[in-house]
Length: 164
Image (cartoon, rainbow, N blue to C red; front, side, top):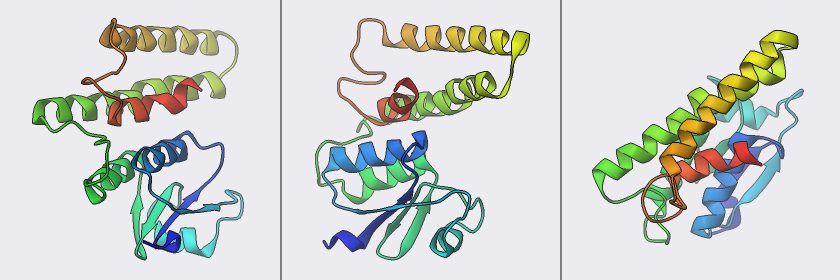
């Protein structure tokens, strides 16, 4: 497969783009990285993601896939023959992995965003909310190395960029 068969439109500091880069690295997929200027979005980004006009966008064989968690699942399904599998084979564990990835987006990301967007007392409240959310994740982890299952996977990929 030629590198240009897989293109990632991204911005270096994007936590959502980092998810995709981690998944591509885990699967050993070669790709062309194209840095986007989010203040002056490229015509390619606007064409490939006309609904949200956001990064990351994975372009595979000229077809776009948008939204980081969806892209990570696409990578796992498309290159299923390449180890490691990012989603567990067991349907229950797959559902759990998706639940925790969604939890990260709805709780961790939102709490971090509130901290950055507020000041004073509101910011202190947001910090306390984030601590409570992280306690929930800590409870899920317990003594385990990974959020779901016995190996690094989808839920961990969703969380890692928020802990950097």
